[in-house]
Image 1 (cartoon, rainbow, N blue to C red):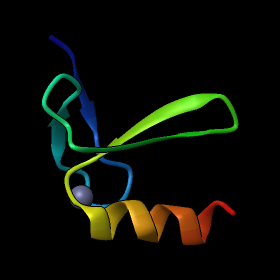
Image 2 (image 1 turned 60 degrees about the vertical axis):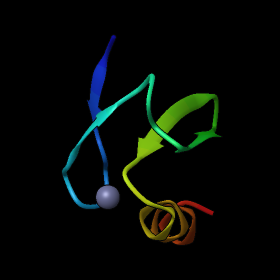
Image 3 (image 1 turned 135 degrees about the horizontal axis):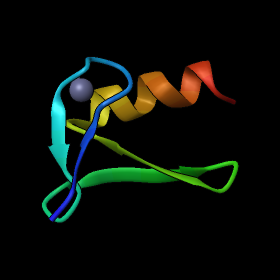
Image 4 (image 1 turned 90 degrees about the vertical axis):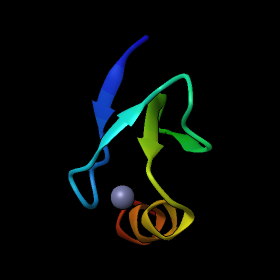
Length: 45
Ligand SMILES: [Zn+2]
């Protein structure tokens, strides 16, 4: 079990339970919600 920070809102996200994640430039990023994921994609096209 690993916990990482949602880069958008700063919330702690459990990587095993995270429903929202994506790989950007080879780095896996986890989010608490779809809105945060969308926001991240906007900032990191
Ligand atoms: Zn978030």
